[in-house]
Length: 328
Image (cartoon, rainbow, N blue to C red; front, side, top):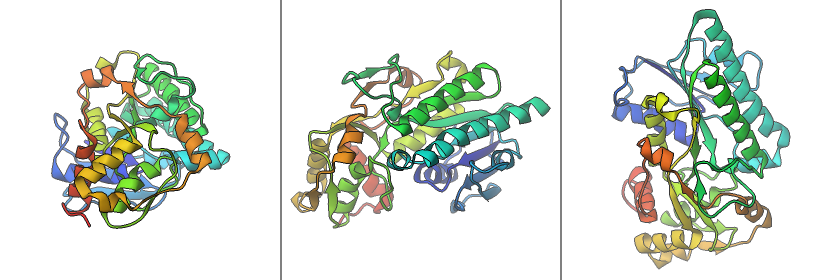
């Protein structure tokens, strides 16, 4: 089995590739080849025994998508994207990467398949940002897509493209509406949601963190561990079970910023919480206010997708995976 990961230099792509070293995909043929691609060179996971090719590739450039799929992978994980804050700040770049890049990939798959009958599985990383506006506190599986940001609009169009290309038999596809990933390791990125991780990640290592929104702000979050498990499960799931609706809201936790902070206090104490500095940012608050606060993801749960049961568990997973089990 050949797997292609597009966006493999990003945190989730890297962790997915590393997971293949620890354990094979359950119920899938043995991994025979792994291709990791991004706009910067991805790293080959330590301990990987499978042949691995790394590629630097920009989906917005002519011929890039064709070069990516030349090896006809069995599974394609499409994780490449411009994140929410950057997509809102740079309209042209957001649409070029998140929409045009996605369609270029799907079109390359279509033309390759027309030539030789190749039909891969595509796992598309969507986002809860496809919902917006005056939605209910708990969004059901059948709620309409009403994005209120450019990023959400681009992801919503990607979902519609995925459904149509799948309907036409061009590829087997599944779209995962990923919750905000928390706690993200490494340095902050330009995602408007980055502070949700920052107020946990930085205090755990003795650094100050900025909180730009009120503590009453409620959001839908899961851990990097769970996000990787979503991808692994989607890579092997019987897609016939999706019916005519291939895009799914993933399970997560609906928590307030205040509840995050109290979980941090329980695990790391008052000293860590004192490192959080309130600095209101109207632009960030406006974007976050348009995001979903909670879901009832019955379809995903019925298909075997799972997540943590408490925010304490999310923090503990970060400490174990990124801090070798120790905090400052």
